[in-house]
Image 1 (cartoon, rainbow, N blue to C red):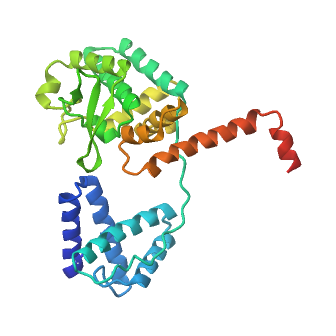
Image 2 (cartoon, rainbow, N blue to C red):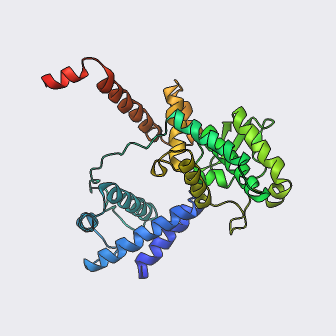
Image 3 (cartoon, rainbow, N blue to C red):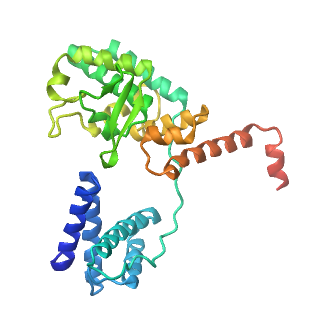
Length: 313
């Protein structure tokens, strides 16, 4: 990005950081989107600062031609909407060229969900792995993994929230966790007995290392805590030993499992929204679609007249 467009983009990113508390990953994604848009618009003979509605439509068309999915196109357009909304609010543009541009149609994919049996197998395998450890270092690592797994399934945290938990995060005698989520917003999430026990076992095994580092799961990394990648890799290794397809398992899938299993058990949608830290309840509602789809499959597969109905259609 150059000249006025570059200055506008930097001002926008500074606003996102200072006023909205956008995370580094979010800011970097916005930067990449604006850089790419700037390059494409330049090839059209215009710029971010001067682009009109037709330029934005052509930009979206270029994304489609390059093989970007409708969801990716919509995300890019959303970033541009935020950018031009900022320019308009700051008086740097008199109009918003994205205001009359339709979002690409996209189908919302249903999240992958592990069954309760799958999660139970993961937890049992994590427990078994501790007893099978060959030395003290491996034992410590596996005790840590069990605590991470129990916490993730018990609270539905984002993996970035999980691995970055500060040492002093417990509240009400350890019955709740205070989680700092997106936009630096805090929420309180109850701890289950198994997750509390697993965390206490980890704290006892790790000694003073956690308090000295300031994190529940310290590591020799730039951040000072365990990375998301290390936990994700360990999760897939445990899934493989438990006989669960590795492609089926990820930290985010466990977050989905937490929400889906709560709703299947009769939990209130608003309560689940609060636990997950979703700003918009429509994000949480995707889990009800998962349940609807599973109920539909259940009827189609097991109702005595389902096959007969299909044959009459």
